Image (tube, rainbow, N blue to C red; front, side):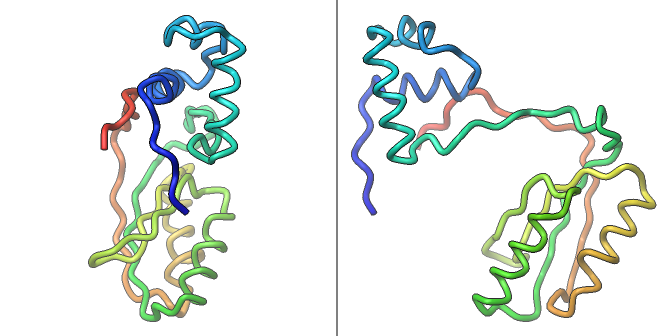
Amino acid sequence: MSKRPLDKTDIAILAALYKDARMNNKDIAELVGLAPSTCLERIKKLQSELVIKGAQLNVDFQALGGNIQVMISIRLADHSRTTINTFQKQLALLPEVISLYHMGGENDFLLHASLGDTEHLRDFVFNAITARKEVNHVETALIYDQINGTVLPKV
């Protein structure tokens, strides 16, 4: 499905929301030079076209007891569509998982997780990942810090 080309106003609206998804419609309209009603219609159109897929809450996982964040690289032995889809769906449901990326290259998945401590990390890796018959390699890297960009990427 091909999407319509976005104009400068659409991109300005997206850039404002990318920087702060809580920005209200009146402020966005003023920033991009539109009437609030026109701005709201454009935002609704971007949502209906799935250019805007939703908004996310940026949570401090330490406040929830997540004292460790990790990136876990995972390689599977079986690359059938069924195995990939099942693996992805099951892992995405686990409460430790922040995000899961299906990747090309040496590793099949990159999993971002938040865990309480090293014992929780060890148990998670053993029980949720390496215990699965389709997994043949796992590498874990601790995250020291994370910074999310606030500028809409240019493609």
